[in-house]
Image (cartoon, rainbow, N blue to C red; front, side, top):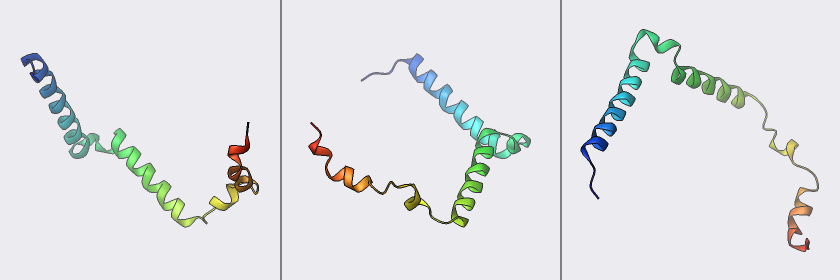
Amino acid sequence: MTISILDGAAFACFVLAWGGYAYVADHSGWAQGNLITTVHALRRRWMEEALRRENRIGDTRSPTHNDVAKFWWLRA
């Protein structure tokens, strides 16, 4: 497999842009309002709230769910 010079240059530009954005997003004055920082804060808040709440997975299950699932092959 051969890669042309143009493909290599495009890949290098992509890597530089990606790395540059990550560096600027983490180390600049704009770091407070960027997408990565905002999503990280939202995920952290969501996980902290999920840890405080009671586990309610059992409440969402239908009482007849197992009965239906056992006989899925009987559908014709």
